[in-house]
Image (cartoon, rainbow, N blue to C red):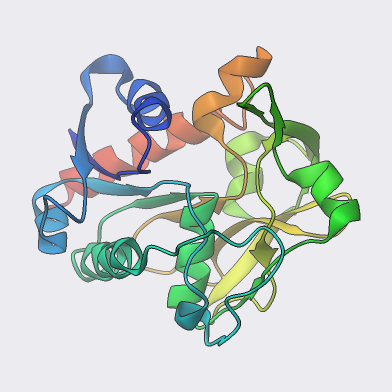
Length: 240
């Protein structure tokens, strides 16, 4: 089994994803705009879109690039590369998992928009803190919507999620639905509104790949999501 993983532009963070996904002999292949053609995703069995720098506002129809906590420099080449990766993955019916920025990119692909900055009050809950030059995630509760695929995966209504974002979904993308919310009403997860015969798709705003830092590696928000993703990849392979 081979999973294509978009490069998060940080080797240590990228390794967190690789180690989380690679249990049980899964091959994880780094996909990087400087090294790969996005069509290569057709050779692999699934796609994971990782977290990282803010998406350039042009990709959600905004001309505003000056806002609190905006990056000093956007990275449009990464945006374009990952949009193409997602496009080709859908054309080839590949299961996709989007994490943090990955969730936001999927939403933008389907003409959704983003809140560019959550503001001080919500950033105190959601945005990672930097202590002695080390990023430390926040932790908050999420409520899972019944009747969703995520509810089925987690088998529960409320969990503690780690958090490291200052942006969030504003307008939901066409064909998508929210499957969980934070206590202050932010969309924390997405899936197909009507799955039908579409490939598996799940986006989460938290970081399941590094929940081990909180001793939460066995939390369903990490362990169960990975297990279901692997199951869906196996199903997809079996019907080829």
